[in-house]
Length: 222
Ligand code: 5RP
Image (cartoon, rainbow, N blue to C red; front, side):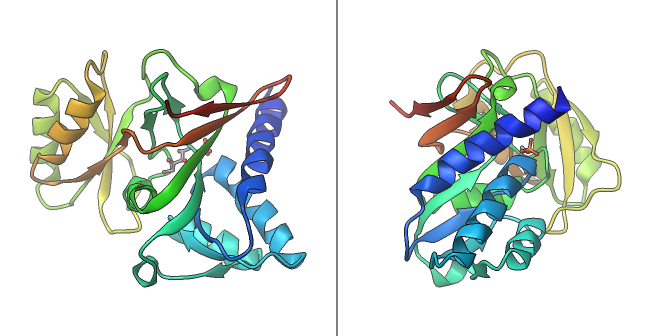
């Protein structure tokens, strides 16, 4: 089962990297699925592909450098041509929950600066309604007070034990019954003092590549 899941992630990743062309600035996602893409890009670089990568986490930066990919500072580029990233869940509107790996802030910054955001997932991540606990990045100062505000919005937050983000913050993983209006909720969460960013990615994905047993399916933004 686990082996199959890895195969599906890899299938999606290999399909996505076909979109990379010479000279592109490429956003490199975080997580086990994105890692397959980074490793394949590294292989393509060794065969002569000339691209510059923008990493969404320290972990991805390390993997990319190890694979031989040039990494640049996002501040040096106004726009990223193509970003390939994973997700924890994807719904029918191609909205996402991200942050299972704790890199949501950098991932959202990179996605928001990308001409095209391609999300790669195995088929188990496609859902009717979100259920994955929503990761919310909060500053350390007063995090318990921020958690209380999240409770008032209907969440049941718990601190991710022993985890500090690349930006020096905490992650609160927030359970919920149902997120009725995801766009409104994303805004409400980011309006709370102490919240740095949340894992709802609304209207950011242009394409979702789904690794399935029989084939690879490409879902496009309408
Ligand atoms: C990291 C993320 C990842 O993309 C998400 O958690 C999916 O990871 P994986 O591919 O390992 O299932 O958002 O912050």
